[in-house]
Image (tube, rainbow, N blue to C red; front, side):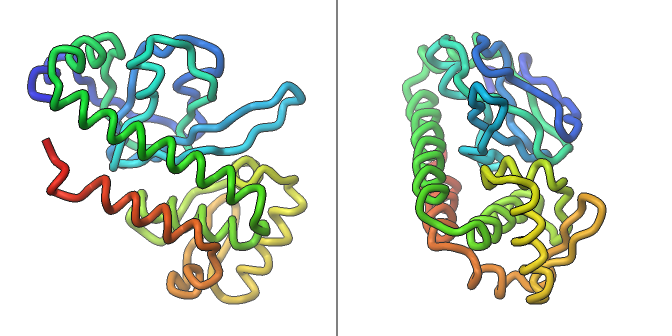
Length: 219
């Protein structure tokens, strides 16, 4: 990655900022530092559901950057914060010249695909409450704190449900003393309790997350 240093730019992402519209070529990839990036799949009727979340462990826009094909998903900042931006062409050219870098990028791409596949199963098979607990835990893992700025609109995208459903499931978690929710900010009060409430997909995703960051895989 040292060879890419001159092409890297530190940027500040705003919550809700669209980084890659669906159906367009990706010209930049983003390595979040304190920001959290969301990958969502839109439908023709205007609805969308989140398929992956990207934090400091990886980068957004990787598969389309390597292939040179348009992105099928919309990518935006879920939580505002810092990130490092790199031209997609620079990453692609360097990866083609460096087998170790290409191997590392393929591992990250595989982790992203695995997360998206897990999300498909989760959305189809699990109830909204455990799914919400899972997404809150995944987001907290990336912001490294109990306070998560998430609006009801975004929670609906996370779960692929109506806002009324978000209100019901968030209220249930609040009554259970697991979270506090006010004005687009969720505070996790009982992480262990939230982990018990979450579906099995959180543990599966966490294991993949830890494996991706394992020092033995570093290049």
